[in-house]
Length: 375
Image 1 (tube, rainbow, N blue to C red):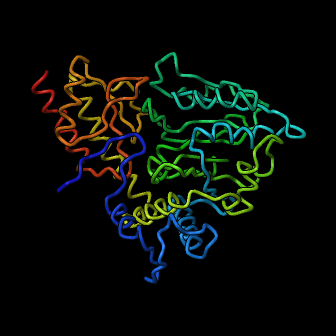
Image 2 (tube, rainbow, N blue to C red):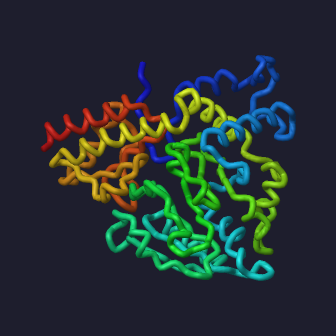
């Protein structure tokens, strides 16, 4: 029987074959040659040869999938994207100061998450808001030519996919062309591994795993080597990127099981044809859903078409008195977690990598039938 389609924004759906493999290996993990360890991954020492092989394979697969250059370090950390809002300025805001004093960071605010980021960063750095689309309801991305970047900024922070508001950068800005020599920091939590990354324009990328990479608990940080070693003196050792990198993410006990699941997902992505193939699939899924919304007089998406997210699609019923009926009917149709974020309202369909096209087709068919019976 087909599992229900889970449109949760995170923790989010995981490919059934990944879950099946994890279930089969729960009590006794086998290595690549089929030799059984007699332990589940959750029971392993993070320094034992069994887990080391899991870790090394996951890191290698991720580097291959995202085409991460050799001068970038891959860190498997904890705390989620929310904690990185503090950890990034603790590590990077002092790039241009002496003795690790507070520096300046630029922020482009395009939704709830980048707004949270700039508020948290104020505890550890001076913040300059280079652009803010709040006045437009976070429905667009201000043109980069209008950004008011600071000449003192150590880095420029973007949330390149706003999970709540459904806004996505479809191309990264070239800071050098904008006259800035700051490092570009991107929060790619909710679209990591859904598309390629232009690493020539990025200094650091971070994201929580629970959207596209697996279960909550793991935080991915990809950081250019020249940005290491500048942490403020108040930065906790476990969050100092250089210390974490020097210890191959083993300075403290890493989130071992989450790394294992992420590794299985990396292997699943490779079997799908890699990031280029999954990106093409994501484009097709998003087009199907947006076309259904735009072709209807019953539903509306308020985000400018040029920056609509492929991963998180918020939409509203013109007559919101039908919201409860829509959600009740969706659940009966085995379409789960479609309620919009409490700060925005309406509906939201998160269609991450693991959401098959069949799930989007089922949602579109339900939406059309609901419109027919309630319009």
